[in-house]
Length: 99
Image 1 (spheres, rainbow, N blue to C red):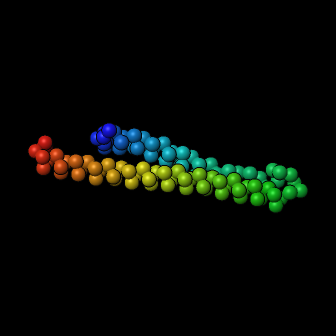
Image 2 (cartoon, rainbow, N blue to C red):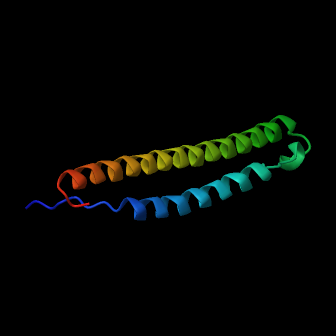
Image 3 (cartoon, helix red, strand yellow):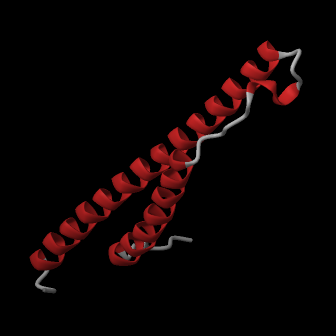
């Protein structure tokens, strides 16, 4: 059974705009509040372990920011695709005398 593909570019753009704004807010919050773990947090006799743990937390936060930025970039690509879909739809509708 065949089903026609229906895409509402404006609805997609609206949802992506909201999602992008939310992710950008989280990115901003993460950058504004990096993890702060004192080196002696695991005990005064374990500075190397404290330093390693602090670096691991910073690395995790950096990866989280990268993940969110990549997601935002992907969503922006989808928004550009919606522009292309809408333009192609307009061209084809015009050719059929529907506009």
